[in-house]
Image (tube, rainbow, N blue to C red):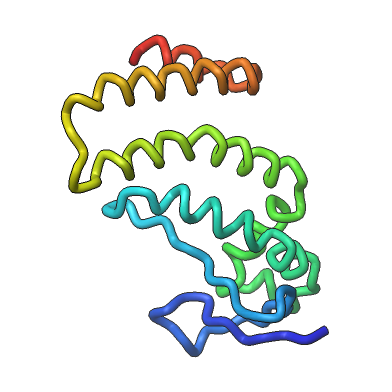
Length: 147
């Protein structure tokens, strides 16, 4: 299998992991940054876009994974191998994407306060729709009711 070396973290380029080359070129993962709006949805999109490569990485044997250095990796691998994780991530992205798009549009230079009520009503309607689509996520209707 053709592999590329990718840094695990930009601050420590010497700390690398071999990731299978799945797509023929590099795909970056976007990190969630609490001070940057929209990075949560960007993170979800990039993880889902790289699902095949991440699954291949998760299935590779990892010698020494129980060491202190691999402790976090050992905790996350079972989740990455679980199809329910990927389904839940897709559902979370589906729920958050319209909120992200509305927030993004509200930052546009030509955005007007006259659009705020319309956008909140759109968000409420979308949350009611998602509550029907995902009845197992009980809080969605409550959130929509509170808007």
